[in-house]
Amino acid sequence: GSWYDADIDHVIISEEQIREKTAELAKQVSADHADVDGGILLVCVLKGAVMFMADFARALGNHGPSIEMEFMAVSSYGQGTTSSGVVRILKDLDRDITGRHVVIVEDIVDSGLTLSWLMKYLQSRQPASVEVVALFRKPDAVKVQVPVKYVGFDIPNEFVVGYGLDFAERYRELPYVGVLKPEVYARS
Ligand code: PRP
Ligand code: MN
Ligand code: MG
Image (cartoon, rainbow, N blue to C red):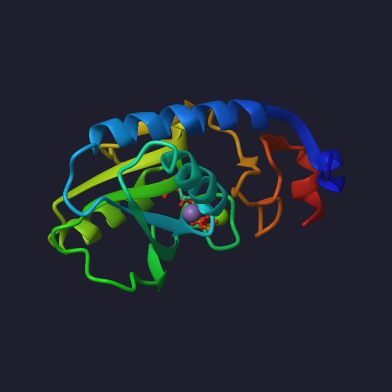
């Protein structure tokens, strides 16, 4: 365990559950893209999706087709625990995605504001297709419906951390997803 464990009230998704689900999602995405031209262009949404991107890409590598990786950084939360609805690009794509089969890799769909904005942004660049794989979704927090084709887990509308998800930039390195103890909020 990590020293962070003391700050976690309870685990909601374990490391093993994440591993199994990631393998399932990779199998589906690969089957759906079996004969696309140019393989899959994964677009990781930094920073939250960093863990999932690394594990999902490796899981896809067991199946095919070939993949390339791009990274975007956007921010909608800043330091707070609720979405501001304002999406800022902190780092854009490095390459042209025209004609490419794009799969956006996200850690979580909360209000849906980040993904709704990002899908429109990427679609405006004339890719062959754009789909989303999100490891977590909070159905009770949704403000904008986003067509997320691949979802790992629906989770309760609580503030969760771990596996890329942060509270004030911390806890991303936890290998599982858990709910923070209330006194941790009070401290900061
Ligand atoms: C978090 C999370 C998703 C987004 C989901 O990112 O990683 O990208 O919020 O929220 P939404 O559905 O309400 O838009 P955040 O903006 O905190 O940046 P980060 O990934 O760098 O932590
Ligand atoms: Mn994010
Ligand atoms: Mg965040």
